[in-house]
Amino acid sequence: SQIKIPPIHIMPDPKLNDIGKRRTALSSTWHKDNHSRDKMQQLRKNITNVFINRWKDSTVDTRLWTTFSQTKDTLSNNGYASKFLSYNARATNEYANAKYLAYCVNVFYSPDIAQFFAKRGYALDVDAHALSDMVQWIWRSAIRNGDEIWIYIPSARMRNLLKEWMERFK
Image 1: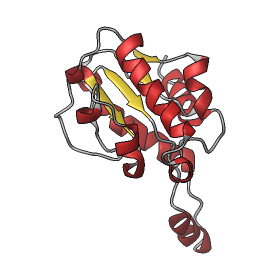
Image 2: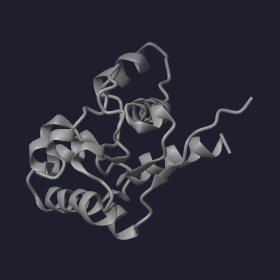
Image 3: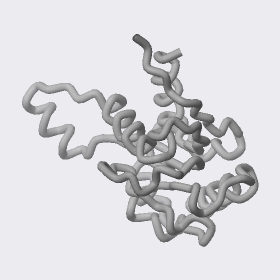
């Protein structure tokens, strides 16, 4: 039998998504390299725009966002700062009312982990790992209650992974 997923509305705006068009955009290295620079300021403006202007029904209590810890403070804004949840968080129901999400990471294995397994002959599926982290994070939201959600995923890679995964359930 098919799994029925409540609607997930992915922000389609090309201007807001332009920041994440490169394969490694919004990765941990990208965040580190761009910390406190123009791209970080643009991403902060994009997140604020989405929560405040695009999703006018959203309130602080219905918002949820994530980034890497190294840029959390740089990207924070009073309109959503308190609703941060680490991208790899597990086992929390505290955000089950969040319907408006911003997933501002692009997950890759640590090079050390990838090398460790490669030396032992194991191939890692980096896309499956990234998708798993994202789906786990999304599951912390109102979707767990069967409610539809709206999500901003500026990374083209992560956005496409989610879209491809959702296509399997249509």
